[in-house]
Each structure stands twice: as C-alpha cells, then as structure tokens.
Image (cartoon, rainbow, N blue to C red; front, side, top):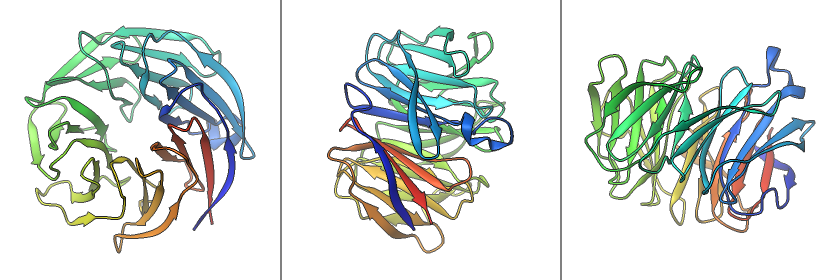
Length: 303
C-alpha cells in the first residue's frame, strides 16, 4: 500500500501537464535522481530528489507555448520536452544546458518518449509518428498511422514495436523496422490519453476520456479487462517496475493503484485539488509521484 510522504506546493506557475523520472544514474544512486516536470507556464523544471525531498536544480526555458510532454532517457542524464510550439528540446540534467532543439512542426507535438536504447526520440502528430536521433536531432524514420491525431505513444520494452493512441479512440501497434501495423485495437469510444506496456512487454494498458482503463495482451485484439472506477477522464496510466501493479490518474482529481492480477483498485488518493495529469513510479517501484493542474507535486511511498 502507499502513503503520502511529501508534496511540493506551487512547483510551477501554471498547471503541470507532464512528468518524467530519471533512473538515478550509475547503480541507481538516489542522489542523482531527478524529477522533471513540464507546465503550461512554458517551462521545464528539473528537481533533484534526495530523501523524499525535492530541490529545484534547473529551470529550462525556451518553449513558447505549454509543455505537453516530458521524458527522461534510460541513462538518466538527458530530458526531452515537447510543446505546443511544435519544438522538441533536449536538456542535459548534469550541466543544465540545452543540447538539442528539433523543429517537429508544422503541427503541435503532444507526446514524446525515448526508445529503450536512448538512440531515438519519438513524437506523434496528425498522421505520423516521427523518430529523431537523440544525438543529432535529425529525423531518422516516420511511420504512417493513417489515423487521427496521436495523443500518446510508447515503445515496447524490447524496442522493436511502438504503440500509438489517438483522438478517435484507436490504438495501433507498429513494427518499427518494417513500419507495418501488427495489431489494431479499437477499445475506446473517446480519445486515448495514455498507453503503457508492462515491463515484460506482454500487456498494454490504455486510459481514455471514456472514464475507463483497458488491459490487453499485445498480440490480441480484444481487451482482457475493462476497469471502471474513475469519475472523469483517465489521463495517465503507468506500470510499476515489477509489473504487478499499475497506477492511473484522472480529471476526477484522484490517483488510483491497481493490482494487475485481479484487476482491482487497491487504493485511491485524493491529494490534489485539480485534475491529475500524470503519475510515475521511480526505478525500483518504492515511490510514486503525481503532478496536477493544481501546480503541485506529490510523492507517495509504497509499503
């Protein structure tokens, strides 16, 4: 079970829309763990996380519109941010400098993530997934989704496939090498806000504006479970590192912890005063972090 450990009040001047957590550097050293947040206030902030206390390390500026999505590479030293200004920016968490600026236009860039080997940065737009080199910022490949606007995407743990969730409620899984669709899922009647692979790559979870979470086996078309419990849009879903649990956050101002085995909600937190945009586990699953439109960051312990 989880309990609230600490909170950072008014961490941004505007709603916090996105969250990333570093792996802690070499040997999972917690002194080098960063929480990275992106906000409608146009800034990305890097917080050093030591003993459940956050210290603001860097404020990254450069985006002209709200920061929709952030991610931290698996090495734990580079953060990426995507904004409504159609730019992707890469930030060095050690030196505090910008290392790349990528024009991802002409349309908004709503979602971003690193590949498991950190070589690629993927972002979604109207009808494509574009993948850029994290070293050079050059476009490496594009996958035609032939669908509506992509709101969320995620690499499989082995890096061979990528899943996309769209505004029309459809999920597609693509083989990255061939760029071919290997599975199409139509689980939701409303936009898919978040998708996540389980750590073993066997399952895919999706969260939607239809108030539901669905769990799939990635090679099958129909969900194995439909989970209800949130009272509004489900904005984010994320698996624990051991794959036994997953967490969700919602416009209903709550965070829920679910057990994958029995598909039941174990705990509900009501620590935020506005919609909870994102939640993430740390690298060993001992902590969960949530961010919200109330401008606050909350840290929970897993007992």
